[in-house]
Each structure stands twice: as C-alpha cells, then as structure tokens.
Figure 1 (cartoon, rainbow, N blue to C red):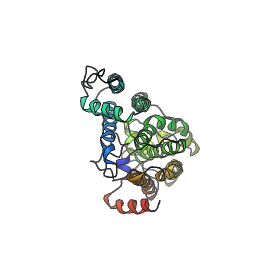
Figure 2: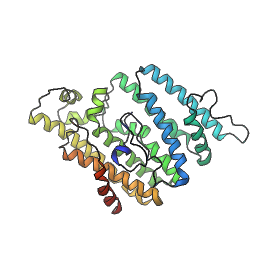
Figure 3: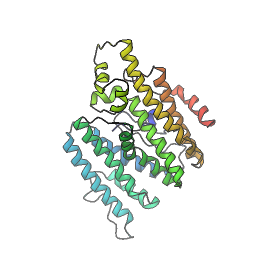
Figure 4: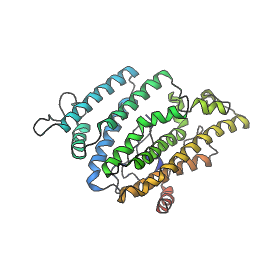
Length: 314
C-alpha cells in the first residue's frame, strides 16, 4: 500500500529510508521524538510495515494475501487481549496466534499496555491494507475526492491519531487538524507516485477530476508506454488534472498545519518538518510542470536546510 510518505516527504526520520512498497507513515523514533515514546512509535511502525509487506511484497495472489492479513488481524486481537488482561491473566505475546510475528506483537503488546493505545485505530490500518489488496485485484478506480478521503480515513488518519495519543493531545480541533495533515500526506504520495502506481494497476486518480479535464485513467496509462508521443495539448490536460489534485492536497495540508503549535516539545518540531516536507514535494511536482506521471519527484539531502528554515518560521 502506498501511504503518506514521511520518508519521502521529509528526510528527517532518524531511520533508514523506507522504500516503495513499505509503510511510510511513521517518523520512526527520530531524535526529535521524546525518548520515552520511541519504543512505542517503533512498535507501531513495525506493526504497520509488516502488514504492508504482507499486503504488497512477494508473488502471492490476492486471496493468499487476504488470508495472511486475516491471520495477522487475529494475532493483533490476541495481542490486544493480552495487553488489556489483568496481571497474571495474560499469555505470552508469541503464543499460537502470534508465533509468526513475535518481533511485532511482543513490543506492540508492551506499547498498548503502557499507553492504552486505541484498538480501533490499529484495526483501521488493517482495513486499509485489505481494501488495497481487493481494489488492486479488481482494478478499482476511485470515483472522486470523497472516496479517496474515505480511504485516507483508514490508511493515514489513524497514524496521526495514534501519535497524538502518545503525545497526550486529544481535543477535537487537534484531531481534525491531524486528519487533514495525514490525508494530505497520503494524497501527496499518490500524486508523487503516479508513475509507480499505474503500472501496478493502482488507480488512485479520481474519475470525477479526470472527466473535468476530458481524461480517463487510460490516458495516463498510455502516456507511460515506452515511446509514447503526446501532443502539447494532451500533456497540458494531464498536467492540469495533476495540478488540480495537488492544489487540493496543498489546501488540506495548510488547513491542518496549525497543529504544529498544539503538539508539545520536540514532537511539534518533527511535525513541522513533516508538513514542510509534504509541501516541498508539491513544489517539486509543480517545478516539473505537474508531469509526475513521467518521473517520480524526490527530496534530496540538499532539501534539508530549506525544510529546517521553513519549519523554523511556521
């Protein structure tokens, strides 16, 4: 599942870069993350990344992937039950239902117990992975922005809410702003990864937006064919659709950006870098005339000073 790419939208993650096809929502235990929260953040990251691998890596068919994700969900249920059991009633986290993933569920059980992590948010992430497997298998096309945001509700927004829970921030305004930032990151990842997703039969470009520009997904697919020749008018149409989608993502990010002032301490500074990283990716897409279907824009090490400067002035 391609997800909001913190490793792609900001180089400041404090961990090895996460490649395409790996879960990219978490700022993994960076130096800006409070030390006492790093084990919990790392546990959440490994839970999500492992699920992403099950959904996306290897040569398994969709039914086998869904079966494995079902077993993974059962292991999560066992982990949650153990974490919430009274002292003496819990079983080891590497019991029969979790023995395949003890490196995931042993630390996650500790994190859930110590921080009372909401189970519903963990389950929503698995819902998203399962949806991605089904949609990819059936060549699903997202109808409009609303349907994409519904997907973000499962795939991206739980990450922000889990982190806010760890930071002790839970008011309605903060949660809404977190959802806006996380959904924006997810959308930015989509428009950054058009050249990657389409060959893998992942159709995130919303049909309604394409129709407004006289386009179909097939127009983008054809543009990716080796030796494809497009007229200036055709390129302008494709770019216009991408520009509109990027504009929506930017507006969503800016709407959520005030959250950086609500998250305390170093975590708030990390969030500033996440926001600025996402906005910088949008800038890079614009600099290539919104032709991200031709080449995937990337942040480089030399973008870091710009991100730090902009984060300072938020």
